[in-house]
Amino acid sequence: MVITNCATTGLETYVPSGETPWDSARVQHLFRRIGFSATPAEIGQALIDGPTATINRLLDEAVARPQRSAPEWAYWDYDAFQAAEVDVFGAYVEWTQGYVQEAIDYGVREKLCLFWQNHFVTKYESYSCSSLYYQYLKVITDNSFGNLKDFVTEITATPAMLFFLNGFENTRDNPNENYARELFELFTLGENNGYTQEDIVEASRALTGFNGWTSYCGAVEWASWGFDSTEKTVFGQTGNYNYGTLIDVLFEERGELIARFICGKLYKFYVNKAMDEAVVNELAQVFLDNNFNIMPVLKALFNSAHFFDDANVGTLMKSPMDLMISFLRQGDFGEFDNQINWGFWGMANMGQYLGEPPDVAGWKGDRAWIDSNRITLRWEFIDGFSWAVHNRSESTYPAFARAMTEDSNSPEVIARAIVDYFIPRGFVSEDAYDLATDVLKWDVPVNYYDTGEWNLNWGSASWQITVLLRHIGRMPEFQLN
Image (cartoon, rainbow, N blue to C red; front, side):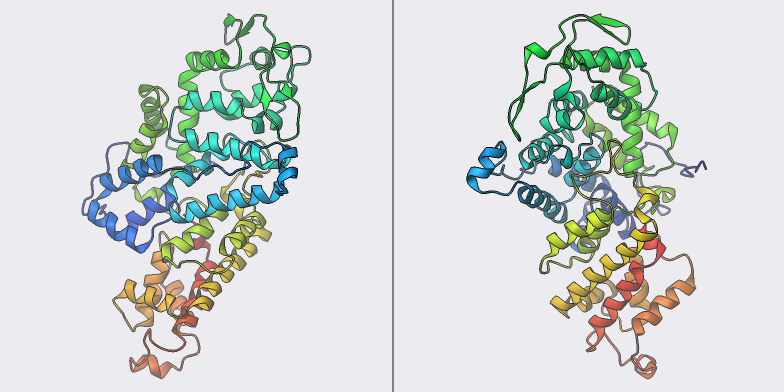
């Protein structure tokens, strides 16, 4: 089934107007997509600053923010782990949980890094070493906003990729086509787009030489004995190509196809699964005009009227990571015991095991997140997080509701405000809002609402909001981003 994008705007700069105001809803749309939602304070600041200043600040800060210090085991081999009595798998989990914490604290860089992890895919189980995983993520983080050609060159030579796609086994005497195939099909051009089987065969010869591997968790060094130093012909060009000059030829000969493919994937990740071909083509031209630098594409996209078009709001399915982090950030609900560990394994159970995409094509996303098993896990996840906030402090939810409603004592006003805050387009019917109000009222006698005595200081108010949040978490609309 072909789904049509109904947006009527293009890549022209978004200018707030009476019809498309810069309001809380559009601020939240921006933060949901560019990162993992906004805290109330971030929403307030964005409303003051305006769209252009907010977007550029978020992106510029994401680039400039220092990265975490490298762990002591960043370049250890297995013997070093053993000597230091550091658990290899435990180090991987701990480092990944640190990434999740950064996503909660910040979000913009982490969201883009998630995109690239699902583009330049590796699987931890293929090399089972936290130091190689760290090195892979370091290349992802270093290059996320940078130059795509440099990114492709660096990711090609990371040990994690060399092990995952058999590059370390690719020698002049025994060529292996795995990485060459995925370099074209998944990483730069797209399936059956601008290359032939013969191009793959020849490219695999250029990618030989990374064969100097001697220890588990150790580096993969360049080994001249494994390199095929004869001429290769790729995309009609002939030369004694190695992995670096092969990528030069790839970008020189197929640059327009690369730009279109990458911009299409960014569009589907950040905007809408139903691509607007004209907008993607415009983004691709921005990419080409800026010599494959990624940041200008992101700024053009997020500053565009198209990004803020109503037709592109609430059209994406929340990933498990979106589900978890957006709930915490939107409410600014703080931390509770074992939050990160619970969240990490909860995401894994819901299908997004960080570092372990299902295959080289990555997480499919969209409706694949909500099969009959995983949808119930998503409900249980929100149940658990909702209760954890309530159990930590019964003042959190009432304070949150007061801030959103100017301390209203109307269950109708409170229920609607909370629904509209957490769901991009709100509910589709008034009956759904009425049901949410009934859930919030819980079993407090109706006369207390009729007389206006009930308010957010009521002893059961936190419990009631918890039950409402659990109800919202089960709604189909809540799964949208």
